[in-house]
Image (tube, rainbow, N blue to C red; front, side):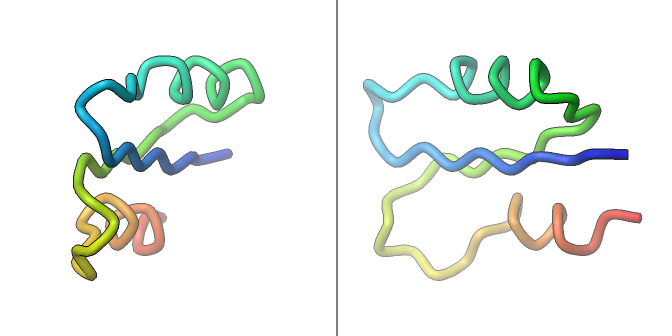
Length: 52
């Protein structure tokens, strides 16, 4: 199973464009982080890396 990861950092960025592109590329599961680049904690990335 392909999984994808999306991170958007600005209010005007829309995650759906990235999610749609990942799904079109065959990703069945997508993980998301919405935050500024200065935060080190990325829960969505951690979940993606731990996903079985």
